[in-house]
Length: 478
Image 1 (cartoon, rainbow, N blue to C red):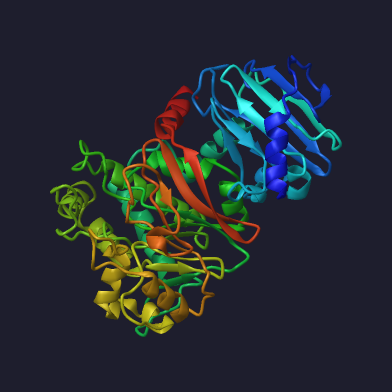
Image 2: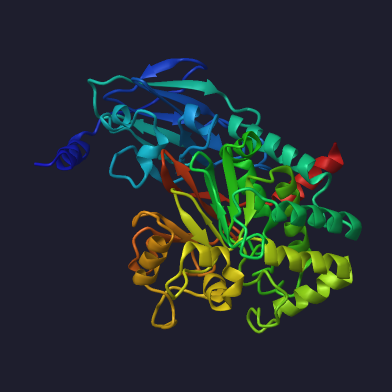
């Protein structure tokens, strides 16, 4: 009998008496072989000790929640890996159970000592008004301590608020579109940086080529199509240790194009949030010139063929930019579109906006990519082959693309552009192509991204929130 079957039988027949406990602050409870229910009071935080492994379970009400508002999600993480560096986590929503087991996808990357965790078979259930902790294994010590009553903001939200304050300082004031002079000056500086950027090989004419190469020591943060969802970019910057690591130079933010043009059917013609989105990206680029990169997508142009539901967003973008910012800004934006890369890669991943070229290429061709408009088109417009899109790329195209870049055959390949369904924010092994993933980061309720933990690219999802409004309200109050 397999070990999974043994533990399944233990769970089936192990039904300890459920005891309700209201622990005092700093009280340590041995959980092993017990089932405890702890009522939720405010925003509690717990320390869970499993031999050498220490975990934090903390309430995650989200920025802007009223004090003590419940029920809310809880986050489980290793404080040494999630607070001080980019790490992985598990989310526990009301009505769900979180089982700590090695067969849960990517869960092992949460822990510094996964063996200590998995040998205990701990589960945590969120009933809305309480948490139920169960550990059926009595011989190993599992200890639970209430470390915070959570009457004020939980630690995780305090960190997010501090990060958002730093983002506001980077932007230089309230989050609103810059005036034409400031916007043009910022974009002109960005273009000057791109012209001489490190890791950005020159093409045959001495201009920035189509590839940006990241050192393997830098942790990538890959964000898909944002489509003017400024709140979602703020969410990314305020979660995990992403901003801390941008500031220390140990991480790089890579946006996979299409940051402009709203997707809400009622706002397809609106362009002000697209201006604000690019203003924020350019300010981030100026603050972190070697650690913020923008890849060109099909919406990153003034072409009239860029349309959504019959609305010519490319043409409207062109007219709006000229009317609000002037011809000088438009010229600088055109230069940005010519200089920004189409492809980002390291030994950990390869990424572009839409898909691989449908022809055999070399690394030098991708550096000189603007000599090859058909390759540019494939990388910004193409989609994976389906019955609805028979001209799309296939697994052989992805395999050939990796080989042309001298990458391992299992190097993860990430794209945006191709929303695979009306639900979700990221999709794995798309088109039955192993380690080929799609991420779209513009949903109004959640934000998907990929980052690297323990040398492996990990998908993560964060709840979206109205952070632009919150930040500006905080600034006006202050």
